[in-house]
Length: 198
Picture 1 (tube, one colour):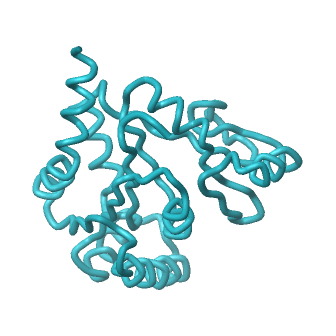
Picture 2 (tube, rainbow, N blue to C red):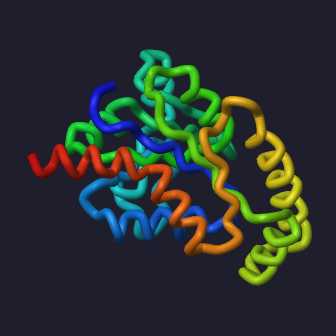
């Protein structure tokens, strides 16, 4: 695939990955584009096809997966989700850095392709901090909180797997974490800006 190098931005829930990404978009509006995933689940109220997801049928998506049209895909809660090559290429064709957001299995799948993004993982300083942030949200039952923490523990361990991520950002301070993220992408940002100006 040609165009600017994509960025694979992964992270734990409540690691504030989305906050970092939104700030990146605000400060570098014309540099980044977010890859819209495909899914076979039904749209939720307010969701738009092509903006939130590409909503496709359960019959069509497996054909596209078998044809090699997806760089990663997974089944979650009985629905298929995936990132298509075309979605990434559309962003690169606009001379933008494509930002991907997939789980760890998706990261492993992308590692097997020729995409070659910059792999970044965002995590809280500890599981205790993560638990505290999740409790402050007040959106979890004790049972769901226990499941999320167990899953987070596994993801934090997996993120240390050799060669899986190029950079792990410990988000203890939002400004410091943002500067680390921006510095890691500075070279690619400059490339896009130079190409856009020429």
